[in-house]
Length: 412
Picture 1 (cartoon, one colour):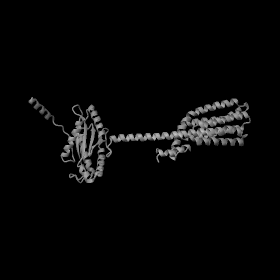
Picture 2 (cartoon, rainbow, N blue to C red):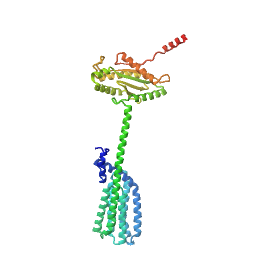
Picture 3 (tube, one colour):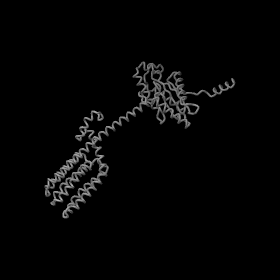
Picture 4 (cartoon, one colour):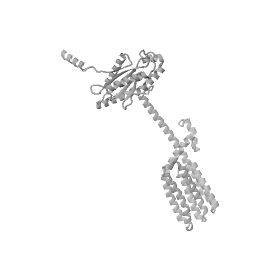
């Protein structure tokens, strides 16, 4: 079932509440979330460090003088953890490891924060130390950008290790105070972190759906655009695209004074071919011929198009009559070399083509239609001459025009 299928929402949306998408989608989400989190942490690390400095300064000022040195030398390690994590976040090559180093850093910061009160005797100092636990948990659940499961492991795992250290190596913990600070803030932080990830997952899923829909719309638009300019059977340009290109090249050659050549190609006795072999084989024949014709459009402005039915047109900018004749001769030979059987073609018993060629240097005395009409006349001559051949259009001699003008003057 596709992710874009409306039914998929019944699969995906419940997974949002359980913080677990289907496998492939989950992998994409984790990559997305990791990148978003590390980009945010690059900035947040500075504010976290600043918040830590304010916290440590305030507690240092309120702590009893006899423990200030010890407390500072111990708690400064939390600042070092934040600093190291912030520096690692600046290295983009390590972005994919962000959940690892940020999770481990959070784990150590919580463990250290929870353990410190267990080594204090002064009740006021102990309460101040518990304030640092609150700060640490708020930062981990709300500012680091860890996924819910990683944040929970860091928060509760670090708290458990810190409590064990305080009980085994220190004076023990005031569990009543610990529950009012560590446990309460942990539950609140979990709720906030969970709600944030649910929103984040829904946003990711909706964005992904929108992107997929946009890609589908774009692909459909491109396909429609291609179909409007491409012949569906042969894959060549269609008549509409040829007309646009022909008009463009005519104007360009007119500006540059370069010749423009058009070849009209007609498959000999193609109706008889269809009647004998069937329309399916007729389509296959046209496809083979189209592939061969396509080989004759290698330069930038060259174009091969299906003109209609079994008729094709080739456009050659900046091609003179000599080159055009060579191309037409090669084209006829290439079609014969395909050796496509044609039982109703008495000349060769193979598929052959007739080619009409016309070349002009565009100017004010002629139009693009004149060039196309000239190629059509040449094609008619090629067919009249027995097919399987080419003819090039020859303009009527100028002498004839002069004679007609003289006769007109005599009549006057």
